[in-house]
Length: 131
Image (cartoon, rainbow, N blue to C red; front, top):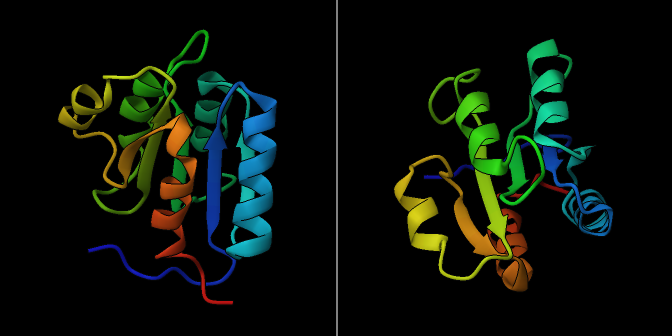
């Protein structure tokens, strides 16, 4: 079960598409009460998490990124946290990969198509920090 998070919970968004990052940042911060940290690559996300300068409650990653993709990022970053400590979400623009990605058991928050961003945000909103 996913618990309601406290106001000021941190959401980490990892995506090489700056427009997607900006949209997520605005909605997560302004409408849901998260503190939002963004990285433009899986490598940058890993460096940030390994530095222990933030402790995210939610991580949202694009799957298709150059270099370290979202699957590799999620696989490596999950090892830095206790089970259930962070809720991982994935989104992809490649149709037909949802089942494959869900079967990896890396994304305990869900896997979403980029065309279904509203459903992703609704899912996150159900556990958003109290305003």
